[in-house]
Structure formats: structure tokens, C-alpha cells
Image (tube, rainbow, N blue to C red; front, side, top):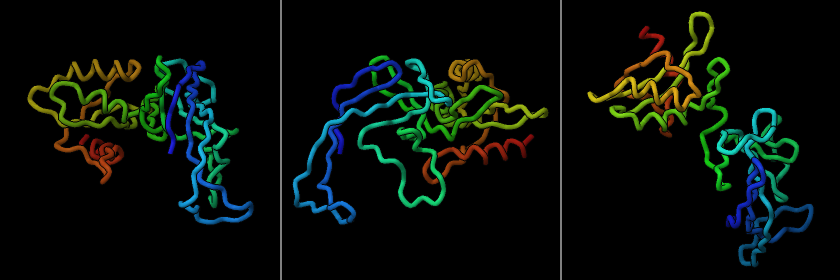
Length: 214
């Protein structure tokens, strides 16, 4: 259990004092189930939450980057993995989240890094776009996905469920606003957005439907 206390802004790095509940340590070299009847110890340590780009350099405030975490109690890796894991690098834990540091020092999450789509050099998190575009009038549901063009370019298409009051120019303007100036290459109107049991849009399935309908 952790309680976040005072947050301090250190450039592109958020530092928080975290009060961590530490169960009693078993004897060295042994493993045992913690005895819940024994009192817990509490320690206060610094936990760093910087947002960095793909090269590991810090990104400016309000800029989306990869979230990584470091503290004294951070483990060195996962036990019993049969394959190398790049979540732990140089004393940092890369959570796989995209995040941005706000001006007040807090951190906002913007989806997962493995969901990012590279539109010919413009990297966009489709989950973030979905959330922004759902506020467009007449949009009941949508999901942004990618399709390959005739010469190998990667185009952005919006699978969408709309009502009678749907306004396409507004959607196009909002898309460009939140997608770093990128334009929509296609609108794919459907009756339902295919989703996983967890509610995640099935973007590959949408892309296959789109190609079949062309």
C-alpha cells in the first residue's frame, strides 16, 4: 500500500514522496509466507516518474512520452522469465504507458506505447484519438485504425457509428487538431465497432472489414 505525499517538479521528472508499507523480511536465503500477525514497517522514499522519448531523453511539460519509474525499492526484473524483458533498463522500470507531465507536476496517462500507430513518421496513439473524437456531435462510437496505401504509405481511417446530426467537417477538424495536423484518409461507417470482451476496439478486424468493402 502506498500513500502519495508532496510532489516536486524536477524538469521533466516528477518526484513524489511515497510511504510504502513493507512486510517483515524473512530470514536471508529463505522464502516464507509473511506472518500477518507481525507489525508492518513503513519507509518513505523518493519515487521518480519522468516522461522520456524513445532515446531516453526527457520531454517537455505537457508533451506525451514514455513513462518510466525509479525508486530504491524497485526490483531488478521479473523472476522466472525464460526470455529477456526490456521493461527494466539501467535501473528504470518502463511501464509501457504513455504519459505527460502537467504544469502542476502531476502525470496524465495517454494509453499504452504498444498501441501507437506510425503514420509515415507521425506517431499517434489511437486510443487517445478515440477519446477526443467521441465528443464530436453525432458520433455514437468510433475507432481510429490504419491501412496501407497503394505505394506503401500508412493512412488513417476512422471506423464510425453516427447519427443523423453527424458533422463530418467537425470530425475532420478535431482529428487534425489532436493528430498533429494529420488528415483523415477515409471514413468507414459501420453499425457497430467490433470490440474485445474487455471493450478494446479490434482495429485489425476493422481494417480487414474496410479493405473488404473497398
